[in-house]
Length: 171
Image (cartoon, rainbow, N blue to C red):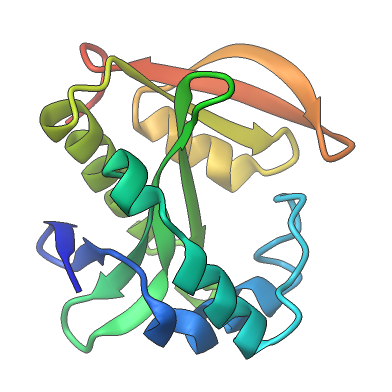
């Protein structure tokens, strides 16, 4: 599987069907998906089916990548860039297993993702969105240099919309 970017502790790689059990478990944790508006996958096979059809890498040269701990190849979650063609913007998203929260992995993976987007894809800006109650995710976005641009409703929740451009990104 193709490695996208790496730091001293982690690397990002394209996802595949072999990640189905890990991603099923990730999305099955109510605390992990609490502020996402997403439902858990119905099972490992549904997760595998989703991953087998995920074509953002081929279409847009970006996507949600597996976050892998180098020291033992453990999947920590996912992070990456998603292009929304209907609205013409790219957003940053991340989801980390609860037992790995507070260790800086979301920030580290997000920096790698943004660096990839700005340096290799030539993106001008990237959006971050979070439920206003999700203080931890908002802090991650702020650490990346994102600034609030507005508020909206998504999935019945109030969300904060933030963004960062390639000139303001804190490498």
